[in-house]
Amino acid sequence: MSNANVNNAAPLVIPSLLEWTGEIGTFQLKDSAQIVVDSLFSTELKHTAAALKDDLTTVTGHDAAIIYANSAQAGDLFLTLSTDDGGIGDEGYLLELQPSSSPA
Image (cartoon, rainbow, N blue to C red; front, side):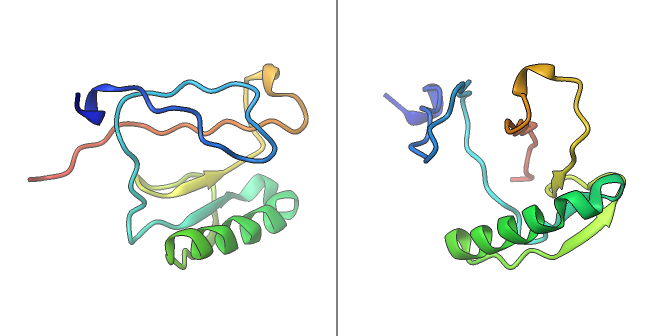
């Protein structure tokens, strides 16, 4: 059986995930990826962006730039505190990945 047809299992992280919906596919961080912090929440997310940058560098070797803007480009990581999802509480987060295609 090919892994391409199996939903991704929840990753082992601490603290553990309360909810996980794994889909089919893979994720690859682009070399051009930046960490884009929502300008409306720059003060609140400054330290989170720096921690994410450090973690990405440690895990992937990718030294992403941190920029401040109202939106991100395809392939960027966008940090914001704006959400309509009341179910995540004060310390929850959403990670949304959208499908894309690469030229062959």
